[in-house]
Length: 124
Image (tube, rainbow, N blue to C red):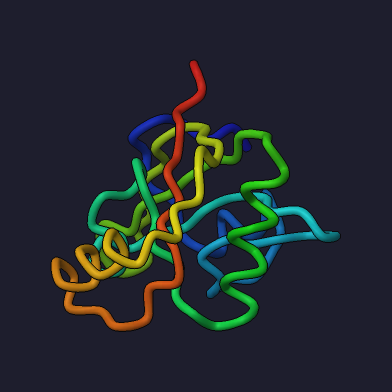
């Protein structure tokens, strides 16, 4: 399957094509992040930036994604089991500045943001 920009896919479609966990925000296979699946309630500025929570696995995979350096397909949840393909994105910088994190927490109503990861769109 070739993902088409602006088209919608189910998590099963994404999993069948790329592997990784169906509920992970950064599904991974063999130690590498294979795609990003982000919701606007937890990541309102996605795909330009994502806001990983503070669980150890979440932090680990966000850091793996940043270290990989390669672009991955990114999907945004638009409705129940409708994930829009937004193109290929790679991690930019990881921001751990507590003031910036506090600003994002205030905007989102969240209290569990561990970092801000900026994303850079690859040329399609």
